[in-house]
Length: 236
Image 1 (cartoon, rainbow, N blue to C red):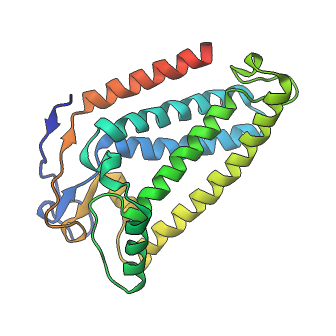
Image 2 (cartoon, helix red, strand yellow):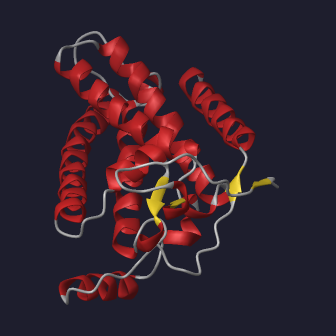
């Protein structure tokens, strides 16, 4: 389906690292998705806490659009974006954690086997959060775009679920931050910098890594289709 963009050496990046020492592992769509999710989750929380429900609605629709895009990109995107690259069975994830406990340093180009499960948990929680928000209400004067399609009792139950899922998201985000800090200060791997620049030191990835990057126009097409789907749902 998608054309492939070859790897290109960039300018010097990172303290003490030059371009030959770095390998691009994350494409721009993944990086923009990651930081946009951070911003929209924060905006959703602040807007709900302060009663800005119209803003909360739009931030929720934006979140849903991004999650739908990420699911599509997990099938047609660049190598490290694809689910097939980082979703492994529980046995492999446990083996990775046991290796870490023994002090070993198994190298992975993108998400490691344990981190892959965290990604899926966050995507599932965000999808449920945004999905239930379509049917939720604030008990006063605001209803989600699909709340009128179901009974008020069911809308109330989904509203409660909507709030409870947010608590799960907070827990997952906390676990994610702890893991990032562990890699930064215990293992010496700067995952935050990699998610900003898109590159990791060559020593941190397997020597046989074969990376392919899909051109940006295909990401824009997936995003446009995701936005159209969410807009249709909201107008349904």
